[in-house]
Length: 108
Image (cartoon, helix red, strand yellow):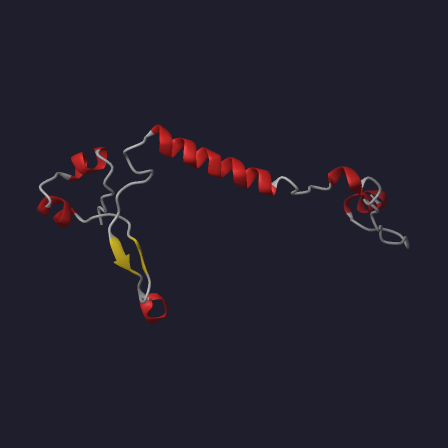
């Protein structure tokens, strides 16, 4: 019965705590980011290619221009989440149809 106690305890006897040494092959695990400039150029080329492919249409949905909330940011204008149901209805469209022609609609 006494020897089972040592099997379930984590540290037994007067031995030093292990100091694991995992620094032997660290060169194999180094990840470098020397491809940042190349990836940036690739992303830009992909954006330009997509814009050329869908030529007269915009790349993203049409969104309203809104002013950011709070005193800190309210001098800035930015793209909103989408037009409200009332705004879409005033334009003579249904929300479902507006979504199909590339207009963002905010359902809140």
